[in-house]
Image 1 (cartoon, helix red, strand yellow):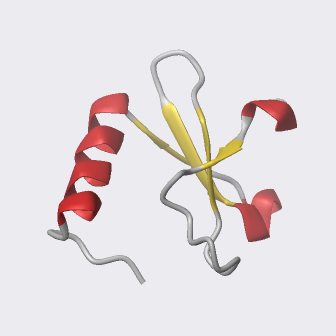
Image 2: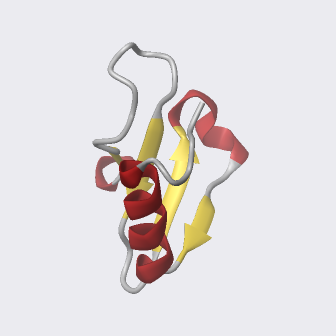
Length: 64
């Protein structure tokens, strides 16, 4: 995935600590730690990503 197709998630901390980047290839969502880009990424379905974001947004899932 070319570097320019990755973007910082809007849910990333603005304090500069936790940095999550997301890429959206066809039919998937890739997630990686921008502080450790060379360590790979997690691949999830778009519906799983939406469910995760909803759970975090609602407070049902805590993120540290």
